[in-house]
Image 1 (spheres, rainbow, N blue to C red):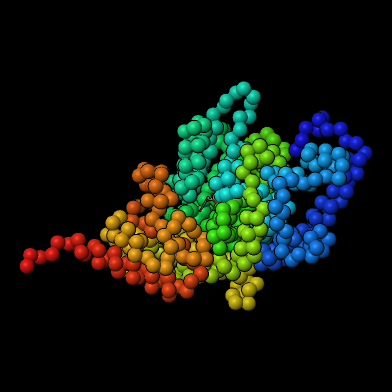
Image 2 (image 1 turned 45 degrees about the vertical axis):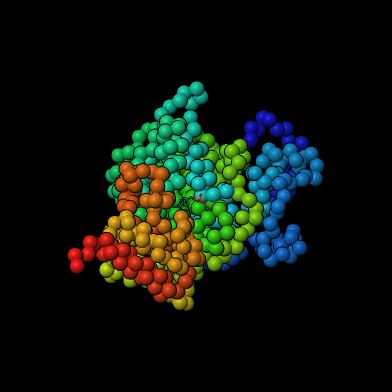
Amino acid sequence: MYDEDEVTITPGMQAYIDKNAAYLDKRAKYIREVVKGWKFDTIAVHGLYSVEDAIEDYQGAIIEPVFMSASQAYRDSDEMECALAYLIPTWCYSRIANPSTYYYEWALALLEGYGFDGETSCCSTSSGMAAISTATQPFLVHQQEHVHEPRNFVATAQCYGGTFQLFTVRYMQERGIECRWVENPQNIEEWACKIDKNTRFLYGELPSNPAQGFFDIQAVADLAHSHNLPLICDTTVATPALLRPICHGADIVVQSATKTLTSSGFGVCGALIARHNLTTNIDNDDLKKDFPLYVKYLPNRDTGPNLHPMQAIMTLNDMRTLRSKVDLLSRNTMKVAEALQNHPQIESVAYLGLPDHPLHELASRYMWLVDAEHDEQYGKPVNRYGHLMSFCVKGGAEATRTFFDALQRIWRATDLGRIKSVATIPAISTHQQQGEEGRKLAHIPPNMVRLCVGGEHADDTLADLDQALAQAGTATSARVPSAPA
Ligand SMILES: *Cc1c(COP(=O)(O)O)cnc(C)c1O
């Protein structure tokens, strides 16, 4: 990770290196022999924070420590030099790392790597967007000094509004890096025909927010690897409780941990998780070997999109019950989607869990409630489709606004993955900035409502929707001129 010629290793430094190598061996053994044997829930609850850690280092505290400290002190100059040269595990300065973000990162690395026969690691970021920009930028560097070669990447057009802006405005318009949009990502040919020798990575969001696009991860990963490229997936909507792309061949996962992972809504938070030894045409061994560690130690050290330790622990605390929460939200969403399908004020309902959704079969191959087969409630594999659904209200944009304004318990907010139900009209909120054409590309009509069903009883959520839809119905008929008296 450092330039070896710049550091002369003294015997004192070597002692620190040896001591820390022993610690790393012990940790690797603990992960391999203990943690990898646990079920998903146990990893979510404990992560890498052990009784031994607590007793030895943190006075027995059963909750991971919040280290509100900007920097770390060293015993002597030897330890300091080793640390700053990244020769030993260290956190140095909280812009680079911190003991609180450490436990958050390990929990996520292990959850995304659950069921994967290989090593994963994680780099925490201050937001989901920070995760996406720091996961993509290292692949967009100029490879030859003084030669500004053309660069492109291929991405699903159905993606989060912020991602669309990052790729079109920041990368394409401002830096001349071409983003080649895939409109029908289930069509592998469309991905394939957009790749050339200047392509740096493939990027896909699934299920996409809000349109619930989906694609065959394994097939796209195979395609990426056949061109020596990595596949980066945004599975914020699914969370590792339903979908772990790394198990299906993806190289990197980005998470807006702001959403379901922090379902309480306490703050903004992100992460990128990757398999070790990823596939890329970038000539950089550190980047290939352990991408999150590379990003943390070098590019993010220099750009500073780090996560606050307090936020890391709050998110970690929400993540402990991820599986049961995602199951509850998914079941509630299914009930709401089924009921809305037959509602006279509704034009259409889109939810991957509905059998008539065009991507239902494909999504059903990938979206499984983790460990349902080990759960006494289910005892067999069970499909779950998450908390995100959308529907179109009859009567166009105006009736949609009337309905929206009449909601009483469902919050009007550009938010998702909450324990509280939240709704938005994407065309006037999350997808406002990308304009009419961009919305058409992403399949976002003006009468579409995105609904994220929370943990309330589904009957109460439906009652709120019902009364608001009744108002939209009244508003539509009220505009019909009444017959002359
Ligand atoms: C919200 C969201 C993001 C951006 O995350 P922030 O934490 O808001 O920066 C990225 N992708 C998806 C799918 C999202 O829903």
